[in-house]
Length: 325
Image (tube, rainbow, N blue to C red; front, side, top):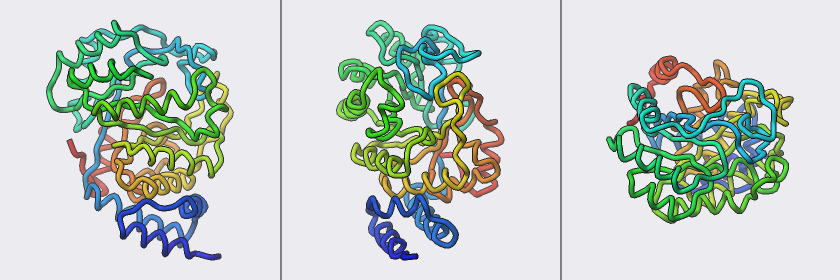
């Protein structure tokens, strides 16, 4: 096997540059000694960026269900009949602040208000602004995942004290029509650009394991790299009964680790975080940090339970890692 890509990878990492498409594809099929070389490179990138510190984030499901969009992975879509999905309108400020106060008991750096639906109207944005301004302390920082907002709405959120905006591309543009048809990829990308243009930090990642090819995983990484975002959350499909992807098998631990490593080296200047689906790794979760992850989502997810925060903190301590606030 020709392993010249390994030497090219190390030279690129030493220069602080992103790897090319060819090297990214090689990483997604690397195993044995070759993958050990990849982990050596990704660990160097993570340590150079963050040392032994990791950033943790948490979310609150602030408006659930009845979503007009047909994203094939999502339990909250009104297009699918998913047993047990909660539906409720936007939580009031007291409920959101209470959830943030609970999150702040752990060393959480960012707390994100997440709502179902493609967008929010101005009255709903006003409600979020009132919530943010009612609890302006610096930690955890306010983050929003509120759909495809306008620049004017994003500016108001920024001025109220929101520090970061989250909006995933979800998957490669070439695969996107297989996942969602109610709004297009251009709309998603424009929201990312609008949030960045108004001076918000931007968190933009995707969901892997939905049936995309290896080439499309690299395509997504390259598309996100081109946007120059601050943070990249990677999620791995947790197939939910009642959704069109309910029969998709989970990614294997080796698939997940190779994908994380590939994103780490394609996007060396962005914070790389792990979100939903990391439980697929089981006892191999600590290898995420060797693969280059420098943060993770802790606590419950939107429609599925997360992992125990105390156990997550113990895992970090066992590997001489510590949360950065």
